[in-house]
Image (cartoon, rainbow, N blue to C red; front, side, top):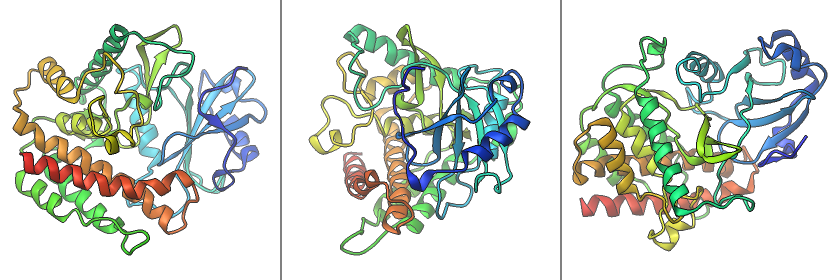
Length: 363
């Protein structure tokens, strides 16, 4: 079998009992996967991602993916493997870019945590830079960018009731719940002191509270829509064949989803410090700017939105990203993970607060 990009040796702190997992899977894998899980697979760990742990299971006839939560203290409601599995199982028939589910295990005695297994969708996943063997013209980059936003539009137009997804949200008031919820999470995860301290974000949180708009609608949102969660066709890297990482998906406001997605969107004319945290190739010639993405999306959805109105969603997206980074940094600062990549998250949180306050001042 060929190597899979991003798959590495399993970190010792993230290892699990592969034999026990394989035995369980032989008993519980659904069709058409039941005949492909004989024996014990070779296991590799994907180095990307900073929340749930993702592993490659290499069987002789098929590659599968195992997802499980990280070790250490977890935020209430986070890392819910059952919910993540069930949402994808319900969504797959109407949005086939979602991987097919193989099995869910709620028995933590098997490997020390709940987990689920799904199909692996072969293809290219873009990271910080294009793979060394991939070249895209500006025209191809523009096509890929438009198709990515089209995919988000298609997701937001899924019929939630018809697909049985109504249980995955709390109804109206999504914007207000998000502002309150992420503010509470940040305060709980904030680290202090000369070594680990970060800013308070209090002015940002107060501004979000005072300026929040009403929901523009309710639909299924991904909540982590980025290029490194998209799978591109092996024979055409402008075609999207898979959407991954549904950990944060829920029913909510589509513009909040877009704002969260664009928090990761580092473009070619951004300043040096923001470029230093780029994790996807949104700087390439031909790629839309953030403003162009917003205009393209709102045009496709028929939503009227002024640049001033957009500021709320942009600030919220950056604040939410800061909270996610701080929750991970909290685990690092408290010795719950030794992954050295997480050390830099402190500076990201500090700089994201500065960017939020700058956008607020510009209004």
